[in-house]
Image (cartoon, rainbow, N blue to C red):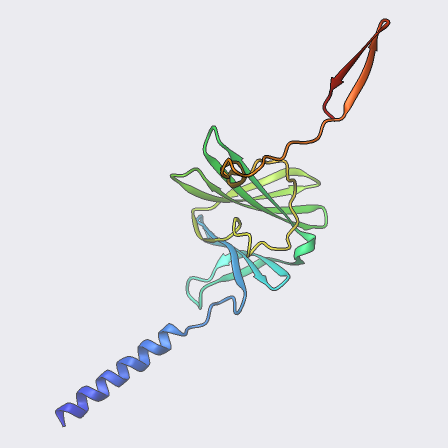
Length: 199
């Protein structure tokens, strides 16, 4: 009898453990690209979700009493082709910034993840017709994949003039791509000079 009580206890404990481990995400099947908490008079939360080629931006109160997640005040749903991403890196300062830009009419919501090698931060910048009107700093970034090329796949680059740190650190055996320079002829006085100029 004592053995059966112990067995029943172990089975009950196993069922409770199994049910806790399969609790659903408040965001369903979506992958979280970025999530952060903003503390203040009312705790707010930002979550940027991706489900296939659809990205959802949620901003609102943090549901601390319910099943977790955001009680949205702003919800934007966009196709990845409507968004843009940017990566900026300063070698001098050792700072890397990944940004996802989500346009909505005359507004753009820019979600950024900043990493200086020691500290990580997040922020949301709101622009109206390209001019910054508000920046909200995150108190706690709980998830971020803005630098993950697999999760950001299909989102167009805002600009590609930054030097990718990984590209610059490739081994010397790989040839370096140098923009081709076409010869330019200029005439000064009666003497013709040939120069290799930049485009």
